[in-house]
Amino acid sequence: MTAAASPPEVLRAPLVVEFPFTRSLGPVQSAFLTGLRERVVLGVKTADGKVMVPPVEYDPVTAEEIRELVEVGAAGTVTTWAWNGSPRPNQPLAAPFAWVLVRLDGAATAILHALDAPGPEAVHTGMRVRIRWAEERTGAITDIACFEPHDTPEAAQATPHDGQFADAVTGIVAAARLDYTYSPGRSQTAYINALADRRTVGERCPSCHKVYVPPRGACPTCGVATTDQVEVGPAGTVTTYCIVNIKARNLDIEVPYVYAHIALDGADLALHGRIGGIPYDQVRMGLRVEPVWTEGGRHPDHYRPTGEPDADYDAYKELI
Image 1 (cartoon, rainbow, N blue to C red):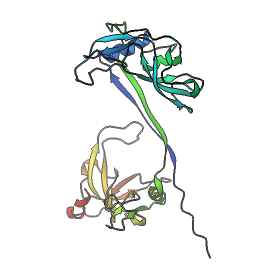
Image 2 (image 1 turned 90 degrees about the vertical axis):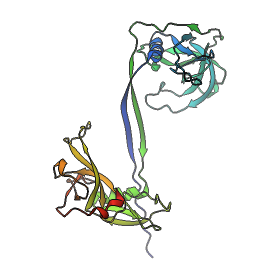
Image 3 (image 1 turned 90 degrees about the horizontal axis):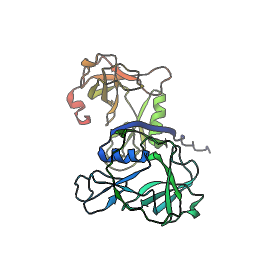
Image 4 (image 1 turned 120 degrees about the vertical axis):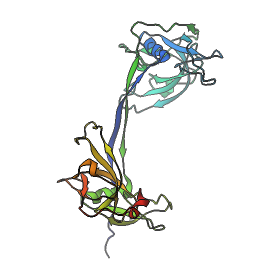
């Protein structure tokens, strides 16, 4: 009796998606952020007299533009909270803290920020807190370093403010970042491992018998699991394409170049890849192509013409 072979290990890898988001500020947001730099918290008053902090530019009820700025207090009341026992990189505090919604004195809405507290037992809804200002302020929400517990009684009321400051902040750059561990799952792990052996493997639906490349683990049409592996290609047909004229950062490919959908022989779904070995303006629908591998590459670097006659349109029209 022989032991059953163990299934291949499912791949896992860290993945980071990040980009700088640049935006200009209108008069309301400009006044709000510039005010933080000057230790002044501004809100806006809606038509029904409600003071909103952080301020918005349009009334959420009437959709009318809001421009009436008011100053509120730097202390407030916690309306709800959640304990963060494992802070992530670049969060407001390195030690465990509470995320809190704080209704500042004079405001009708709450602002989200961090509360520096020794533990969850020190936090409760209704507790009084105040802003701890950052030592260096630039006109950003991080000018509020965090909130801290304080026994100040509620007293401050909203007072009119003209929103005028010297050297106003007119734009911001926010770094958006998402980092996580990605796993492609059983089906795509097998697909990626096969590519490393210079093979392209898809999976066939047991119901409609379509072969999906890359495999998804389930048929998107029938909703049943796809477990039968099928080797396809290596050659295929260009079903449609686009000409890229803008050079991407950190991508060592000269423009213009062609990116195409390619239906590999035996597959019922087109995958995408770069077309090389032919002038960009000679790429066409129906062009027969094959993969080109670089030494040590784990996936095709690009696809090039095979020299075969173009495929008839009826042979690939359902895959466009």
